[in-house]
Amino acid sequence: MKKKLSVIAASAVVISTLASCMNANKIESQTFETYPSSETIVSETSETSVDTTTISESSDLETSYTVETAPHSNPLLDYAMSNPSEYALNAYLIMCPTDYKVDLSYGFDNPYTVAKFQSYVYDVTGIQDNSLSLSDVSYFQYTSYFDDYSSTTFAETLYTCDVEAVRAVLVSQGLRFGVDEIPASYIQERFPMFYYDAMAFNRPNKALVDSNMTILDPKTMTSIWDPETDLERDFKLFKACLNYNFARSCYMYNNPYNTAPIQQVRDAATGKNILLPTEDQVKELQQDINSIPGCENIDIYKVEDRQSFYDCYGYYPEELIDARWEGNTKEGFQEYYNGLSSSDQYEIYAVQPPTFVYTYSADTDSYVVTQTTYDYSDPQKGKGKSR
Image (tube, rainbow, N blue to C red; front, side, top):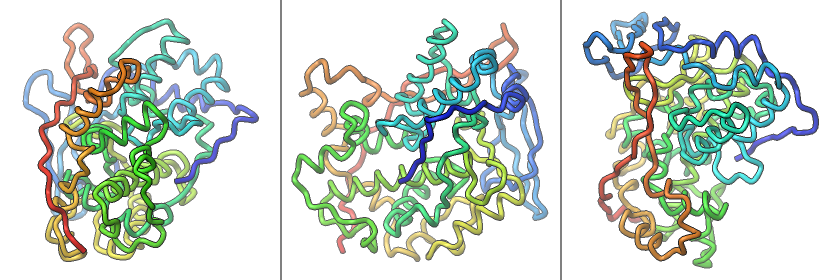
């Protein structure tokens, strides 16, 4: 995974774009010239339901789903306009810390980054609002420091083993290649030990190092099943999720095709962070993903079916997803966590990561995002697939 960071000379944020994109304080309806998803997600019918956006294609498929087309009031807008250079740099460091501790690759709603964002808002505005999320500042998409963000495609970023692992995760979670991120809630639930080690010790590979394990070079791996141990295989799966999210973020911040960044919004019906590419950007994404061996038939607006995955790899996605290393099971991680000193348990987020839910407020006649606790069920351990 690659990132560029330029901190020598701060450049001005694009104020006009910030003002136009972040000034609204309620969700509005908007039409996007893009392709629909393969699923139909319709908001509940009520007087207070969020507006729906209907997106149609030249085919017979028509999809209606709810989209947060305008962010809530940006709490940093006034500060950004008065301090553009400092705002631009700090925004970048919130999303991409120089110590690589926990960044946007872990999902835009990962609690570590969200907590840093909320702390920054408090530092410069004096406002403590624990309901703020990165969608309230449009994920800092229009901040000038991201002009120096790496611009790399999925095909350039993902190794062969990454592609296999990512496709398994996306199929198992009902996510679309490229358009949908692998959410923070999934990464924290599926890999609690790796996430905690990254957050608390800045060492996501701590368990591997502590085991004195010889690690395979992902460049030489032909399959995610090449590692002989559950621990290493789980770590490769974890890294594949981060690499996928990073490659996806390149399209948002410094489009590798040298076109405008692809806008990201939160789907108000599902809470998912989704990309809304234009028709030309859809073609670019398709070209990139379809150039990956084995992905020639992937449609970025359709969730790949299990049988298609099986036909390509000879096993079903859940065989890989359920083959957890014991440290990444709920029970295994809880046992480890209970044995830590109280000073090492200061970040409870790793055990109970939050998600964001939209709630209608009659007082403000708008939808507000609230934090709730993500409660995951006990994972079922599978035997995996021997090779």
